[in-house]
Every structure is written in C-alpha cells, then in structure tokens.
Length: 93
Image 1 (cartoon, one colour):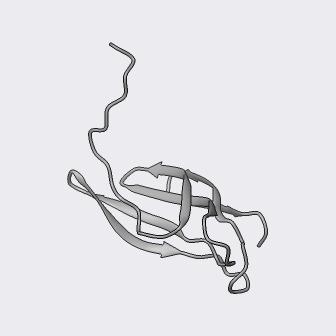
Image 2 (image 1 turned 60 degrees about the vertical axis):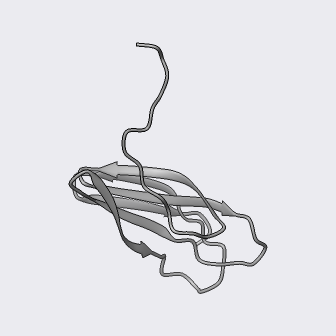
C-alpha cells in the first residue's frame, strides 16, 4: 500500500456557486451539503441527493429547508444518517 488515494467512481454536483463541503453516504444514497457560496446574494441552501444505479451515481433531487425564502439558512451544513433516517442541520433556519 502506497498511501495514495485514487478515485474509482465519482459524480458531479449541479453547476452553481455553492461550496459543497459535506457528504453523507447511506447504503445506495449519497447526500451532499453546502456550507457557503461565492456570490453575494442570499438564498436557501440545497441538499443534493444522489442514488446509486449499478456503478453510477444519479442525481435525484435537491432538498430545501422549510424556512423563509432567500435567507442564508445553511441547510445541509451538517448531515447525519442511520438506517433509513436522515438528519439535516440548518444553523440559521
């Protein structure tokens, strides 16, 4: 073992200015959350959901918090899962 990492399988996030920095894998599901963005306008943060289909990861949908629109809610800045339960943090929602 050389101690080097190599990517065997990967997926791309949707194109946006979000900084996706959190990931939670649970069985055939992956959830990708954000803790910031580049542009300077406020928004609700998306939590991206991907599902494994064979050897590929397919985008399913974006999940948003239920707070007021167009605020920096940081939905998805923390993510945890166990079995079929997903817990998503939103520190300002």
